[in-house]
Length: 429
Image: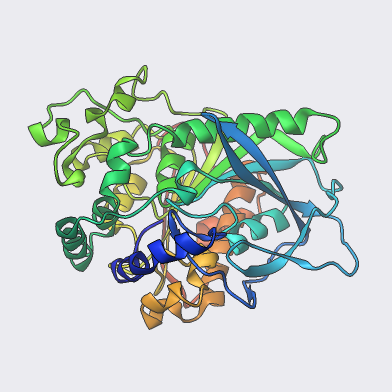
């Protein structure tokens, strides 16, 4: 999750006191946040299915991590809508029976941003489920552990980057110690994604599972936000991490003070991979990275993106200071070889798709007024395009081409662009 500097500074002041008196039930990494109370309503779903939500857990590297399932559900009379850990309420019902009438449904794996809770993207995942998908959202190691730096010069440097519209560099510097110690999350993120997916598929295969026979495991998509979007590119998109080029001393030194100068190639976690493509999961057929920061060095980004063949939609906000840096995202879009789309939402910060943060009464105060306004209209852009994209590439739904090729008319759509496949794979006919 991208981090607003003013808010981080305020939260750090109260963190120690808060943690000494109460166990945090919601937050951003290791920083606790008071959930919205009373619950705040998020955007309504746009699909025809009722939605259920179930919670279980999975293991990765001896850690027990939470996992949420969002799915088409049977109607439940007199049901109370599920309220997320952040106090967001939608239309989903906890443990509602699976509606298998329209199945089997494609599976979508969702990886949240740095420090973000697995249920913090209520409207986004609920809406996909309402269009006939089973969405599996993963908690990660950083959800309750990642902390921003307390190093004052680094925090000052992060503020400079943010003022220069370099949001991705700002978040790298803000979380310097975390990214250095976890080697840009290479020590755990891809491993958790692999474990979360494999154990989900195992669960689905059991006759005792409520999802038995209801999931089409031959059509798997992936989406993620922020750090989760970067790993969506690596795992779902097959974007490689090349280390075969001439690097500067700063790039190769894992202790370089300014972490934005360091290449992933400086760390053992990259050395231990068998090659640049090892993180790719070839079973994933389409991806939506939501505002990905790029930890691959700028000189190698176009080259890495050119090795991506899966259909992709880059979906991001247009706020230059409150969103992941635009130019690297555009570089990935323009150089990818698969059918690709570029969707940018007007007056939108990094947090909008994570409604548990965007709608949090405390957290949202740090955002510009223009980014807080018109939440429902902006959320509709996210919902319309994400559902249409997966309908086209996971279901082969021809009617979705009207949205994906012609765009939609919305005052909240800042930019829409697409390029055809640069390889043999074409849009479904």
